[in-house]
Image 1 (cartoon, rainbow, N blue to C red):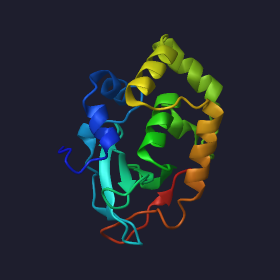
Image 2: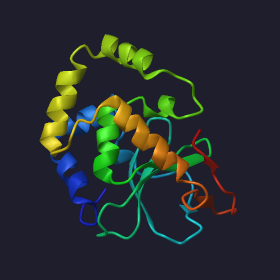
Image 3: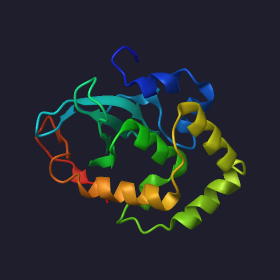
Length: 177
């Protein structure tokens, strides 16, 4: 992946191995996986820039022209769902640091964050220290989980219909649930 047309925060992330490693796992955000399985576009014609992928074949996109400030971040799953998850790359990274299990926190999924957090802590007993360190390395805040969930739900709610991508067959993705 070239970084000449990439968000400065993403370029910074790619220069900090500790941050890149944490965002890859447990965050499941890997810039090296930035290709999606099919061509997509937004009905409005607003440009999409793939910035990372996840282990399940999903892709994170920045919405808007390169160089625009605070481009929202769109997540497109390999299962045909999509939606905004953050108002900027910085907010998306805060989400991935604070709620790496964000997909299970979507309104229709029914998982409780406390239980998910407990599961992650069994694998990562030093989770808070690692979160604090990575956020500091990237110059990001560490909003509380409740605030991150509120932001996520607000972004997902704004996704329909403007931010639901369409594939080459003109099939529209389903909203994240």
